Length: 158
Image (cartoon, rainbow, N blue to C red; front, side):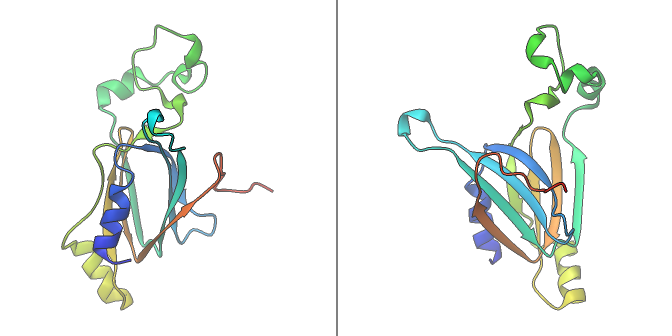
């Protein structure tokens, strides 16, 4: 995909649910799993999508959660058992998804992508993904978007 196609693919999941992200088990490509939903009155069923950022040479993940909220969210009750509590005041990690807002975009004229393009002799791109839990920066060569089954697990444990 070129930068415009990547941007259009990212626009498709603006304000949707980021349910998992991380390197593939072979550790070359970076996956972002999204549950995309429409207004229920449309009758359009949710889609579960895997955004695979191929040949990912850079992945940086930082928190989007403010330090004072992090401090209030340290208790394990924010991971498990939060459903039975009405006294929690913080970021509930246990919902197991993040809102893709303000969303994802291609970084125009990315110095990092240009440097990697020269090193590898192939076009590279940089994308920034912002959700309410994490800020993700990726430098990669290509993007492949696939529909996956609900509950798809990115890793098989043997």
